[in-house]
Amino acid sequence: MSEYRIGAGGWGYFDIPGTDPLKVYSKAFDFVEVNSTFYNIPQLKTVDSWARRVPETFTFSVKCHRDLTHKYLLSPIKGAGGLLEAYLDICRRLHSNLLVLETPRSFNPNQAVDNINDLLSRVQLDDIRLVWEIRWGPPGKELVKLMQEFNIVHCVDLSREPGPAFESDILYSRLFGHGLHNLYQFDDAELLEIDKRVQDSGSGSMYLSFHGGRMYKDAARMKVYRKGGQFPRVTQYTGVKALREVLQEDARFPASKEELIKAQGWKVIDMEGDRRVHAKALLDKLDKGMYGSVGEVLEGLEGLEGL
Image 1 (cartoon, rainbow, N blue to C red):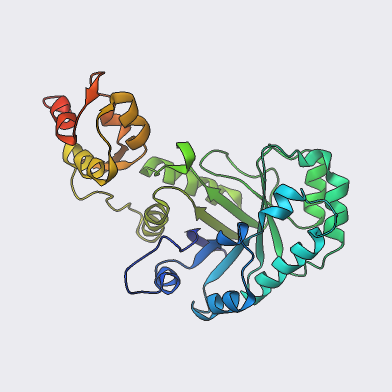
Image 2 (cartoon, rainbow, N blue to C red):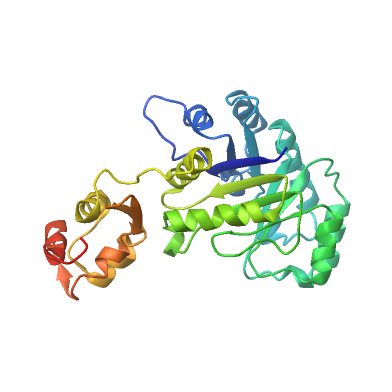
């Protein structure tokens, strides 16, 4: 029986005053990618507290510290093996079998296959799977061979790529979309395409980790769709009123048309007929020029057909 888990990159922003964010998050989702571990090595008592605060059916994946991937570059040098072992221990304490590695765009692992093999041969992975996001580019033939030998999962962004370089029993996708600095929200068509790519993978265990400006809402919408076959609304209003709704959140004025599109166009709004579009679709209809307020933006759209 296959499992399909949907979550986000951390629970730190899942903040409801007076509540424990992790406990509340674990009631909404059954999976989380722990991202804070990329920047800081947590105390084991903290890790143990995470495990105690979630249901037994909840799943963690752990992002490995950046020193291993960005400083040591997965080489078998002093400190690398110990750091990897420490993170494998964190996974075990969380009953997690997923350790996420993210190597930078500047590092070409195809030229470091021997070093990576040496490092991984020194540790006992047991049933923990390494999930590797290779930002440099696609893995070459020798690197794919190494990844398969160590049972590594090739992690890709299914909003940007059709799938991993090779088939695996596990599919893991870190989803960022197409925005600047991870500012992005997925519309219905994009979520449908992601889901199709997941289904086409043929994997037995599938994990979607949403990242970005609306990651909790994106993950929740995908869960609702998976359960009932329809996407929920994202805004209270539709059309121009929906645009007003999202602009009032944080739009800064004065701003040019181009600045508004860059800062606000990534957000998704509801339209008539149970459909959703990016705010850019409406902002594109503005005349070029400067706008001093949300009201001036709405005035600029008055009388336009379809709004």
